Image (cartoon, rainbow, N blue to C red):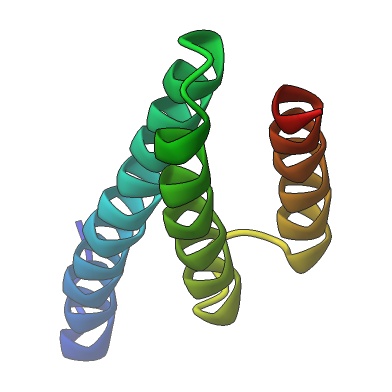
Length: 88
């Protein structure tokens, strides 16, 4: 356990940031799963709606530095390919 006041504060701040990052990552995974469920059900309207939500969540996570921007680009590309494959 830390003895120095600033080290104790860093521990508290890190715990808060970790919880926030976990919350955002969990929500991100949930939106992607909803999109993939709509794709599996072959529901085009729902897939398009959930795709926009998934892209927005990915972009928000990247802007906050929670996930890497290249990972976001790759995910968006793969999700859009799935959506285009369903529409075609």
